[in-house]
Length: 195
Image 1 (cartoon, rainbow, N blue to C red):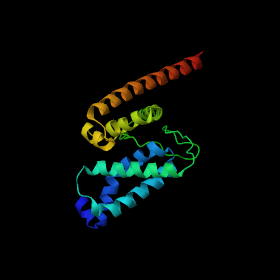
Image 2: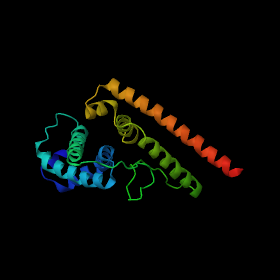
Image 3: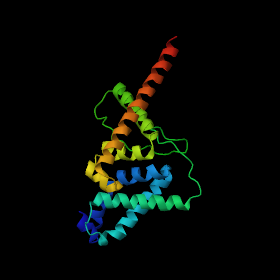
Image 4: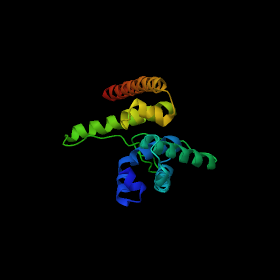
């Protein structure tokens, strides 16, 4: 698929876009925070990729190379911007219509109650991930949402595997803490309503 796309095969390139669009969008969204800007930059990344594919020599994993294009494009964008307003990455779209981080949603053939519960849980997890530091959010998305191996993440981020593992461990610990605090808050609200 990659070699065919590097030889100008548009259909093969379309397969690459389909396979990597969530990675590209989520990577950029981590950096720029605005969904609208992330969508624009994702298109820019795929244009750059199309132009650069004939020069790709396979010296690293394709996903690592694509990740670096995303990061470089985001950094260039941020350098041009005087100030980026912070925006929410929670599961509920912001008032300006921002898309949430894309997290796999397995809701096939579930009851309406189960679907509502899953939607609430997904929103809580997305909101908690959004409150992690950029470094922690980056590794948890790459590992637990995108499914990359420790080796791949280490290559993408130019880190040692041990650093990836320790960041991921801290991210998961902090995520559990945030989710635990959310659950306590929900219980307190439910109890106060019952009074």
